[in-house]
Length: 481
Image 1 (cartoon, rainbow, N blue to C red):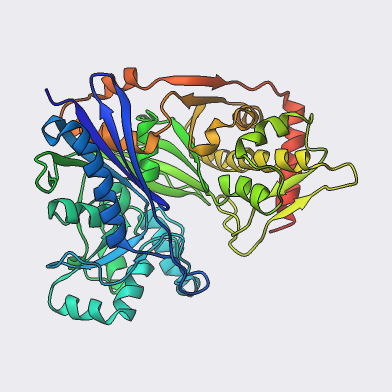
Image 2: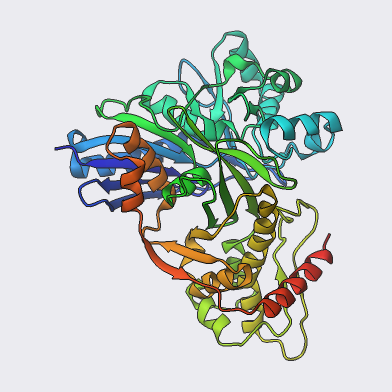
């Protein structure tokens, strides 16, 4: 009996394949390969897409060799969002390095957008115009890569996000899903299709873009393995689904290099100032939207304190260090190393540590660094509350979710229940669950029973203390803005 599903987690620094056993309802194996970005100029970030594909294929082969292809039901892909690849339709080979979501090469172009175009982008796509998204990356390739123009004239140019590139290499199908498409700055979240007016403005031909499909359907058979690719989904939406946030009012935050907070807002898009509105998922005719806010520095703050300040050797020490002092002794750490994301949206400000005096110890600064993630989360949650969607708890995943001090402080400062799931691989699980739904292995009801928590944190802080601490954060941020 076939009993496995493979979930691909193609991230910014590694590609992984996860083997899920449907009889045990758990992950039983993981294969991982790391890769690096290149930085041709200041602010430019690129990756070798062909190399990523080959490494990803190695991880798939490693798992298939262990359990045999005949025992695998299907596969799903979760991927780094906004990163753009252009390739030759006939040869399937990239014609330029992938331009990574972090790349700022088109920032000036965004700054020079007329205000009426910025307003239309927000209204139609739910996004705040930024070089982070895909549209200006695609335009840059069309304007600056000679082979792109040649292939365009020959009708042999394909341009898409990493999910689209991997799906094309694995199945020959030129598709993307609604969650990834909604991050291109070309996708109308109301019509669920590319927007002709935006395509015309950026001078991007529709014919070079992939067909948009749902997150849970059979796409095509994977190479000669014989099992189908049955889901595509952007990594943060995958995490939302993998955490079981299927319905309106459920939210998750992923603390990785940065932090990503998504709130399921139901079947109609809601536009909230200083936040992104994005597609959470589509299953058959059911569509769900999400509000999203991003924190630029999460575990990167922890790494900075380790590598640059030498405060500890092991990031796991940060929790005990923070708990060794009763508070931060008035210290606030605003980790704006590359600016501040939601709800501040200031890419020019830089990190500060305030409130240092002769009594300050490294433990105070470490505690302030951890607390910064919770403060920034609160700023986003307060903005999300303007949507009218009621939130009672938040689920947490990512590397920093292992830090018990952080999770307790997150519960305290937000006066909310914080839930840590039993399974930590929420992103891959989102792709696995969506693929399994397409193959009728799962139902939403069954997934609600499968997904279990390992810990729940409740607020222990008094309202007066919470207000006082958060006002201190606001004052620290205002020094930068």
